[in-house]
Image 1 (cartoon, rainbow, N blue to C red):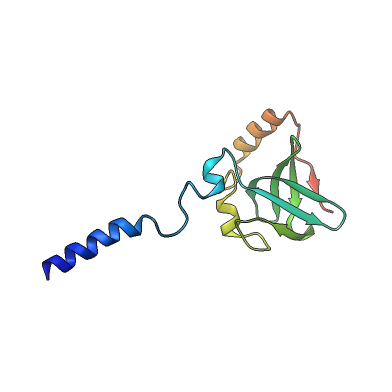
Image 2: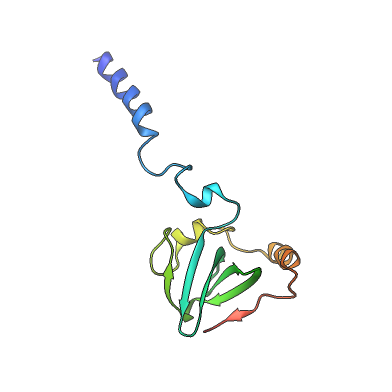
Length: 122
């Protein structure tokens, strides 16, 4: 009985660490910041880094500028890290998975040289 327990424990250690996605295979874990996504709206498309997902908006960095995109204006999301809409899975791969605090937002605005984050509705 004891050899079986040892064999099972050894197999769990060896194979348990190699099943599923590893940090090396997970894109956002290998780069600073959040995942890169593409948002398709009715009149435009924005591709860039996912900064944070908020209650009704998505904060993105694209072409050196921050944008706050209204979630309802997004028709389609291209991302290898989540489904067609925003949710907890997408938030986890953003730069700030816990959301943007006012202090973090101020620091980002300073870093990007913007007075505020423009809201994109279309």
